[in-house]
Image: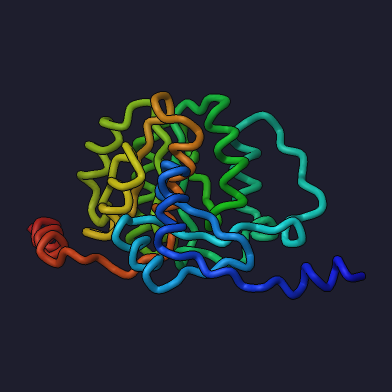
Length: 235
């Protein structure tokens, strides 16, 4: 009984800027997870903003589901699990689902899809044809219509997808090379498509970049870039 009461009344722990800096250095990524009772001090929050670090609340054992569905070893089943509203997290970082286009998935992609259902918003599979370019066109149409908030392209060759996506109206792609670059693209011009070259990126790299991409946004900061994009799309 005493143990249960202790767990339900955890004392808050304030994380200072120095303590946060140590965690950032140890994690080596742009995402830091806090325990249920940890709170950032104002100076720590300023440090997180300055370094483009996404701070997330970790899921406790009490919050985690007791049982997990069996996942078949193919990317389609993993995507279906992500798209199932019953399996999505309650708190979403973005205001809508994210479209997913996958080219020639390998075992690492399957593992990534299984992990993503614990991390971010719902995903909609755009594997409607055998051609990733046509699937990206369908995604672009739904982004323009507001059906999805953005998209993640898991490609064998990112340069191909960056070139194609960059020609589609309303798509603002960023290539996922590192967490800081993705965070900067989101902050500067509200990037709405993340392109990942899954054959060259590790599971942890891709997961961290997708977390940053789907985190809460405050709107684009670089109005000159946004105005130029709008002018070029009208031309």
